[in-house]
Length: 507
Image (tube, rainbow, N blue to C red; front, top):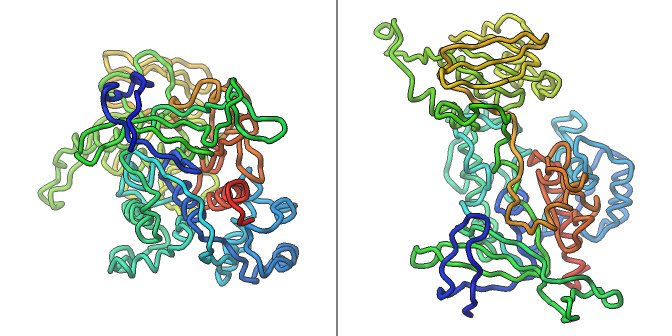
């Protein structure tokens, strides 16, 4: 271990004094984040490659892959394989692997199973996974009582089928959750936390690492050799510098410094809730996360007037405003109505995923969608509160007198009085303040505009997931538009193939 002089505080994080010892490492690949994207990439870089098992129902895809039947899919031509393959992801290889991993979903045949087998190979790329919290990323912050939107096979990571994990843990999920086609988030939080240990990624895992700075020390690439060089012409084997703070062996914070050949961004987009930017948005009785709403309801449950006859049932009689048209907002509406609140729901129906969800599979979401469209509440729901919709409404201000001023769809000004809580649940954006401004500004498709996972993701090469504007920097998952775990493996395979080709002699 070497001692370096460390810079002052970066982006608001406290860094130990310059006299402190700095933990220093070098690696081929530094992965920022430790959610499903980072874990999947680590699994592949750790020497687990995908192979086609020869059973895909699409004749064209089968013919293309069967041509390489003695090779890993990593050794094939991704451009050829992905050509003409469509899907719900904006990224080519993500759609290809969605077809391969989930053919039953794509083709509607429940008997179809995954066409990919993961096999160990004698090829590993040294890498580090850097994350502040336990493995799982944003999943570790989600409220555990909610059911996951995705089916179980969509949320599994390579090398660890859910059934196998359940057997290893000695769980009986079927008894606890009879309808385990969609398990609660709490189960998946434990699954992702266990994953690195179950598939052997511990040596690459670094938890308790808070990244505060990522920059490229190379001024440009040498035109003849392609090597990274400084302004003085010095060659850099490890051009990427990652700084931050970690929890040391003695439990005290200490600075760390990592130099890497390549950097992969896999931090997701859940760190920074979006805001309305209206007057009064940050009062003590407003919140921007589902947990804020959940905690308010939990703190304001009171004994029902008929409590003695209903096993002390409790209700929350509060008047609340919920802003948003996505799943998180719908979850908040479900909880508030179930608890007995009067919910004023402000939303844009044009941008709601609820309209696409099956009523049979997602009855609660279907019930909320009906309410949003002015229909009668479904009889099977447990809602005991009242619901007032404001489609296409706009919040104008939130006053100190607990009044929320709203402009309706038709331009009418309405003041909602005696509001006890406001939940602004309009999505989130990535927290990339650790990136050098010259890098972050050029990352999105629309350079200089805010990065947005849906409308303005990181501009990447579709076949490698490498940044178009910043060589050596890769992006995975929500940062490049893949917001569901189902589509993550394809992007990880694409990035892994490029990294393995550049850093080893395996391909």
